[in-house]
Image (tube, rainbow, N blue to C red; front, side):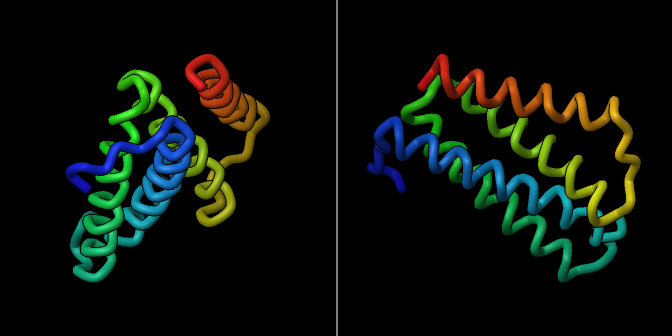
Amino acid sequence: MGNFSPTANQAWLLLAAAGLLEVAWAISMKYTAGFSRPLPSLVVLIVALASFALLGLAMKALPVGTAYAVWVGIGAAGAALLGIVLFNEPATLARIGCVRLIVAGVVGLRLVDG
């Protein structure tokens, strides 16, 4: 990974993958029971490290503020939506509206920093 410098398009793909992995580790953390269950805890750590690694690669070609905001946005929106689906968390109009704002921000950053 050390010498790999992604193109802008590759960086966006890496960033999307990093964001999806962030969703995976955030959701997986629920299954760790406060990191008291070894296997789910190990999964969280491995997936989180992979997410950070892809984010770091994407940052080679993208502005740090944009990359971090998009990574967090994908993770936040994805975790919120999966929380509704998997854990019966509230699906209020306000909550869905806020997730839509996060998605709009991510799309907006992609468009301005393309």
